Image 1 (cartoon, rainbow, N blue to C red):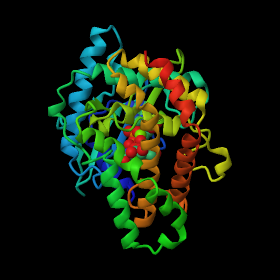
Image 2: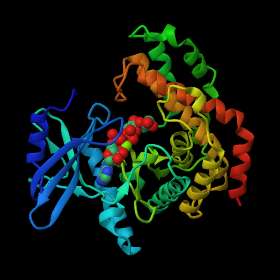
Image 3: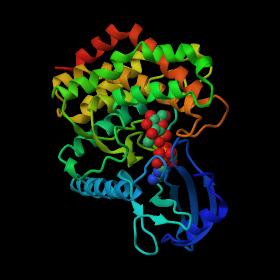
Image 4: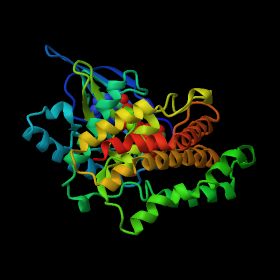
Length: 371
Ligand code: ADP
Ligand code: GN1
Ligand code: MG
């Protein structure tokens, strides 16, 4: 898709229904997928208004209309629930700003898709756990999110990325990438390739159980990174789940596991010094407690029992995805330096090894909450 040019951005901005005078615009956040901007408007006499503008990644989300149908459906459903519970729908769910033509997204003259959300003021999305309580609060929020959507008509949701957490299918894609080796990088990452091949059982475990009818499909978020949640600066509570592009039927263990992969790591996702990367058992414990509480009794005993496996599967899958992208020439995840995806892959595999070493402790922690 190439970089966003000023001209392209200006065209988009001119086509949304904004109030006031644009006084500032800047790239924003650390997401790997969309191009995100923060715009600030001066509304005379009423102060400043901030909004989030995003160019959606249509190479990854190939049906942006369907995606926006999901987001509209889920946010209006959540809005109703939030109002019923006496909450603030302006801050506790995403709010779409419509275009001048009253549509939920704008297609520009290059065929790219843009959307706008009200900026959630007075809240922060963290790239790393600074206070353990923030992590606990994010767990309660992601659990609540899953509970609030428990009765959402799942059949109306589009699958925005086919087989998004089909780890088994991703394993096959990985093997093809190794075989094709389009960048000639495979020989230099033999150790990482061997790591993937030695973990085929991890790739298969949930797919096999699903096929055997042993696991319930639920409406899940599927991208439960810590920076996809807004934590209120004053109350410290998780206030809003964002990045709804991948809300689809999925597994609760994967939502749990993806949060652990990112938030319970003692190092950044792209840390180069692997001695800094491990899975923190106190954070794991805290997240498990918060998530199970947030889900409010909706999970089966089996789902809870499989949470450590969710952490391992999501971390393994993510590492394998980073490695696949490295082999394919870094076309999926945004990179900011050479070998960035390889660095990311290595932290994930280090985490998987660490989880394997701490497997009994993880099981024991989860048993405490599986009553
Ligand atoms: P990506 O799919 O690229 O991760 P996100 O939708 O997660 O894109 O947005 C990237 C970042 O922008 C988020 O991590 C968050 O920091 C910020 N952000 C997104 N939406 C909002 C919002 N409505 N209010 C405040 N910040 C937001
Ligand atoms: C991407 O969009 P973002 O940055 O929140 C990716 C997730 C990965 C994550 C790894 C649609 O999340 O699946 O786990 O990067 N999202 C998509 O950090 O592929
Ligand atoms: Mg995000």
